[in-house]
Image 1 (cartoon, helix red, strand yellow):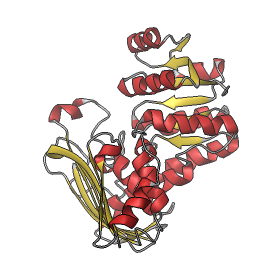
Image 2 (image 1 turned 120 degrees about the vertical axis):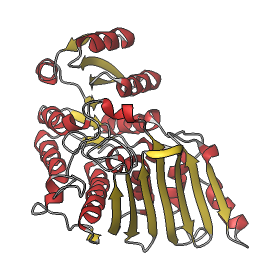
Image 3 (image 1 turned 180 degrees about the vertical axis):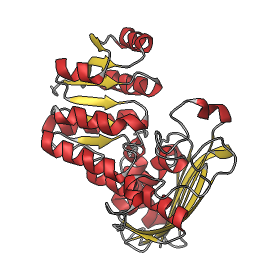
Length: 360
């Protein structure tokens, strides 16, 4: 029988319910403690999920508990300090997106993980559906051929009142706009399939929303393997869609969904004369797993039980966070940004808005 791990939930809002429900369905980890600054929300969460011990803050929780896994379900500005506190006590962390507000914070989290001997993983659940697993396994397969082009569009809509929540719409607390907090899931999936990115050219704009951040960004990303992708992140698109397209020499693979996908949301189109080989390749992959917290948590718990690094690791997280920083740097300076360029001497290493948004 698999080991039952102890989990602690930090922040008891809507997303915490997704974590709790997944843990209950999986039956691999029990919630032993939770904390929230909102006492009423904490009490309601504790009652709903039968959490035995509730704490007014994370420090109190960590002083009394030693959970195997701390789930960070708090606003983005709290993620880095909370992660470092848990990692410093030797507890591994599973953090909702965006995991940090900057590359500087990510490096501080990595140092804390190393010192505490614990793991940090980011919730990027779209990596874990069976369609994504199939496509990742086929990159480099001669039946599909070399990847050439890709499209990654997160076209969402948020009404003005959405930004009335104090931590939304600012670089100081949320870290950025849809590039940071909305499109991140789709282009993390893009990166997990196409691998290392090499350079980016981007624009960002504040079109309509009452925010200090962008509400739209558009980027052209070139990958180390030569593939070129267009990446659009929007919260000003009334007809919502999350669309990814991967063009290979012998096939086009598309994913069309909004907030989560199953096998039925993938479409594979073979080039002329390649139908049998492409169908054989696609049919060889896994099936039946929807993207979502269940899929990622199952793999995370497996890794922790065996002492392995859980996905999505700090290495994987850095690739995605660095692309975000590079999109902002390119958009705000008008320059092409190369991977590895944004070191500690760059203002975009310290903050995603770097030298300041043009409209500030």
